[in-house]
Amino acid sequence: MVQIIETVDVHVPVDIVYNQWTQFESFPQFLDEVESIVQLDDTHTRWTVKVGGAERTFDAEITEQHPDERVAWKSVGGDTEHAGVVTFHKLDELETRVTAQIDWEPEGLLEKVGSLVGAGSHAVKKDLHNFKTFIEKRGEETGAWRGEVKA
Image (cartoon, rainbow, N blue to C red; front, side, top):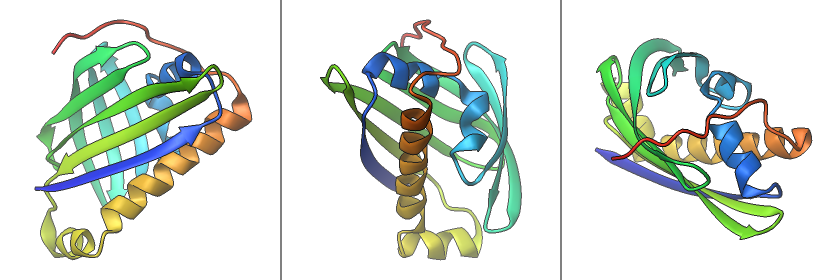
């Protein structure tokens, strides 16, 4: 199992940053490897990703969600085994720290070699910076889901 932890500071209030993060279907706009996400219900999504030229599909379940604080998930079935949590920390009225922790099991030679050279960490860091650019440029969320999911 590989663990990745990356952080980015975003110049947007915590509620707007959190609200945007709950809009999973918008992820392909800033997560490079994500082809599509379909929100199946409040706690289930279906992801299609392309990693190293290989397309994979998996479902994910939101296992914990607290507005303006955290969103945690795990994969359920499909081609990829992983889990993670994204936390949101209010630094001040206009600044938010976003931290992503992702635990995943590399599949196949390409992913195993990539994990050894830090490709996953680099990809997560790039995706967080893409998210920062996306939400700072917009200045507002594309939608919000403020429901609570208890662990």
